Each structure stands twice: as C-alpha cells, then as structure tokens.
Image (tube, rainbow, N blue to C red; front, side, top):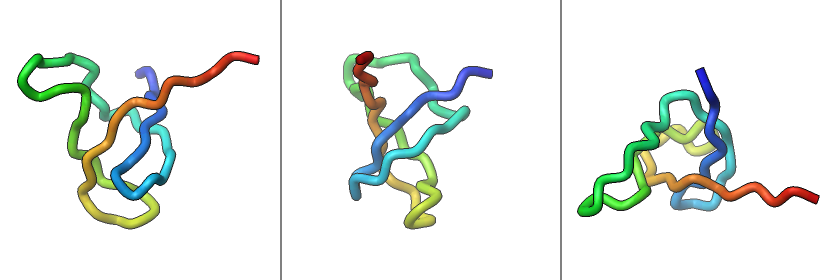
Length: 52
C-alpha cells in the first residue's frame, strides 16, 4: 500500500496509508483523517515533495 505525505489543518505533516487519492470536483483534494499529533479528525491535503 502506498503512503501519502499530508498536512493537517493545524500544519502538522505526517504520512498516511488511508488517504484516498480520488479527487471529486465538488469535494476538492482535502479529506478527513485522524492526525497523530493532535489526535483529532482534521481536514488534510497532500503535500508536494520537492526533489533536490
């Protein structure tokens, strides 16, 4: 299973395997996932990783 790096609404960055990557036009790229730092359901969006 592929892991996705995401950022929650509070700015915490973590990876998750449960992030569905299907993008519905009316929903946008954000999903609700439980953040491991604040232990709450937060809206998260994928983080674009820069290659150096």
